[in-house]
Image 1 (cartoon, chains in turn yellow, green):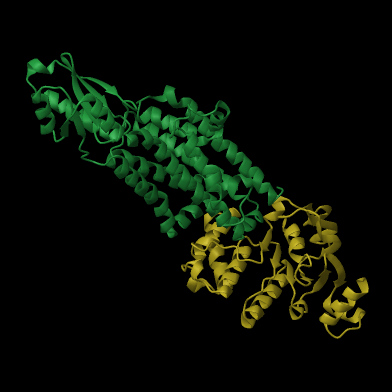
Image 2 (cartoon, rainbow over the protein chains, first blue to last red):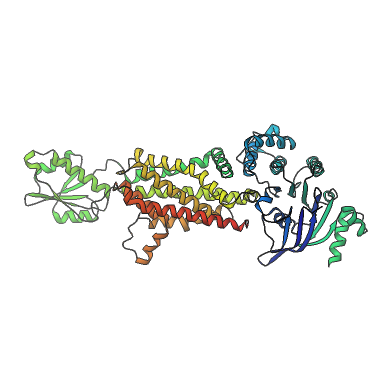
Length: 240
Length: 341
C-alpha cells in the first residue's frame, strides 16, 4: 500500500536558522503516527508542512500522492494547531458552521455534520454558548470537532492533549484509536512519553533531525531500553 | 460560497462586539458634535466700533443686539489689533464703510448679520445706501465647520475603519485562526474578498449614519446630492479597510497597529486640504498625491460646499476605487507570507 504521507529529504530554514535538517519519513494509511520530541525540535514546523501551510526549503512532501502544498489535498486534511483557533465572539455552533462552510459543505450536510461532531466531543449541550465562556478543555474539544467536520482522510494534530485533564486526555486517545480503525490516518505530535506509547508508529525528533523511526516496542527493543524515554536518550546520544 | 461564509462570520462577530460597532459609529458623531459646538458657537455678540456715522445707524445696530462703541478711526485700528472690537463702521462720503477684523469667521458672520439687519430696518429711502465692506485680516469665507466639515467626515470614517479592520485582521493572525483558515482549501483572494464584503456592509452603514448626522443634525452645509456623499464616504471607507488589513500584516500586536496612526493616518489630515497647502514647498505639496484622503476630501467638498455633480468628482472616485483594488491585491500577496498557495 502506498504511504499516505511521504516526507522526502526535507529541510526547512527560517532566515539563517535551520529548523529541520534532512528529514525523511513515511506514514502508512490508517495508522497513528506520533512525532515525539522536546519543544523546539521542529515538530510543529514539520506538521505544518504536511498540512500545506508551510513549504519545505529543500526536499518535498507528498500527501495522498500529490506534492504539497495543494489546495485539493488540503481539503482532505484536518489540521489542528497548538492554539485553539476559534472565534471567541461566536457560539460553538456558529464556529462550526463557519468552518464547515469554508470546506464547502452544503447546508443540509453541514447541519448533519455539526450535530454529529458536537455529539462526538460531548458539546451538544453547549452548542449555543459563546466560546469566550468556554473552559480550556471545552475549547480544545471544539477545536477537535472543527477538524472533523469535513470527514478528512488525514488528521494532523499538533499537541492535541496539551492543557487538558487526564480524563479528557484518555477520551481523546480512545477517539483517535477509533478513527484510525475506521481508516483515518492520524499524525500527532507530543512531548509526553506515555502518549507516544499509544501510537502505532513513532518518529523521534531532536534539534531538527529525525533520530529514530519505528513502532514503540521496536524502538525499545533495538535500543535495549525499558522505556521510550531511555530509548530517546539512547538514540539522541548515538547521534552525537 | 466560501466567501459568503467569511461575510456571515464577520457580521455575527460584529453584533457580538457591540462596543466596537458603537465605536465605529458613535465616536465619529461625538467628535463631529464637539467640533460643531466649538466652531459654531451660537449667539456670538459682535462688538462694533462706530465712527462718524449718523446716530440712527448706531441705534439700529444696537437694536440688533450688537454692542457699539464710539471711537475715532485710529482708535478703532488699535482696538482691532487688540481684538477688542470685531468691526469698525464709519462714513466715507455718503456711503457707510465697514472694516472687519476678519480673522474669526464666527465674528465676521455675526457682524455681517447685524449690519444686514440694521440696514433692513431703516427707511426704504436710506436702504439703497449699501455699506462697502473691507477686511482688515482674513477674507470673507464660509463658517469654519462648513469648510472643515467635509474633510472631517471623510477623515473620521477613514480613521475608525482603518483601526477596526486592521485590528480585527491582526487578531485573526495572532489568534491562530488565520493559520486555521490557511490550512483549508480557501484561496487567499477569497479571504481578502470575504473581509472586504463583510466589513463593507458595516462601513456602508457607518458612512450613511455619520453623513446623515453631520448634514441633518449638525446642519453642515450641503449644496449637492446626498447620494454622492454616500458614494464618496463608502469608497473612502473601503480604502481605509483595505489599507488597514494590509498594514496589519506588518504589526505584531494591537499596540503596533496603533503606531501606524501617526505614520499613516495623521499626516493625511495635514495634506488633505484641511490646511492651506499653498505656502508649502512644491515637493512637499506633492506628497498629498499618494494620500487617499486628499481625493475623498476634495470630492466631498465639491459636492457639499460647491454643489457639484459627477463630472467634478469622477476622477476622485476612480482614484479611490483604484486605491482599494491596489491594496486588495497587495493583501492577497501579503498573505503569501503565510502560505505559498
